[in-house]
Length: 305
Image (cartoon, rainbow, N blue to C red):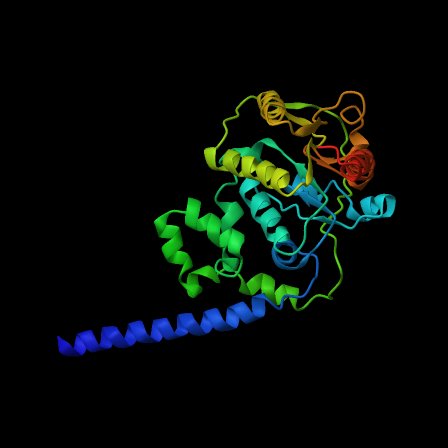
């Protein structure tokens, strides 16, 4: 029996030593990730490195829509697109809080879609960046506030926290480094403009609370916030009504371009697929946002709340 206990202790000691070693080496490698323009690397840039006057937040509908270079060329402001495919308000909040540790944006552009305020992306929004737990304070604080005790316990293991990193870290070091602004163009072209209607919509309390925290954070730091519903052929009328009511009650600027019958929805050549603009459509939408951003910057300069 004594020998069994000794063997168990030895095994635990070996595992603990491996965990510590993996954590030390893994953190060193993570924090030295080069900029190459992949999703995971862009998350690292957004959470640890980038600074910008205009910060763009949201999901893939933000990532494939707003072009920072166009915004910078037209306004003279630096811009960065921190949109991440399939990520909700919780991830957007973490990025905003991370940015504020380095700089204060003048304007936050938030593209909001239905899935961002439901439970659809609640867990993967954190799971995809769990390797930064303990390294990024906003992410760590979010997990401590909203994560289950089981998740918190698992994330204290470096072997678990870093188990999904080798593939993308290897890729990040085998493709050429390049400076990126977060925008990823799409070049597809739909053959028609059929509208797809969705009737199911139910908000998630955590995602809504994170949305509220984004609004409160912007107000606290005197950051101009503008919320967009980007053009789409997938329409959720309940979501659009909820968003309009939600933003109106909180005095938040909302520009609803979802299924815009006058400009986007009757032009299939602006869309890569039913829910994302292609590069042509993105340029048109970015031009619209540039006008809005200029108004906000002017108001800020004049001290208009």
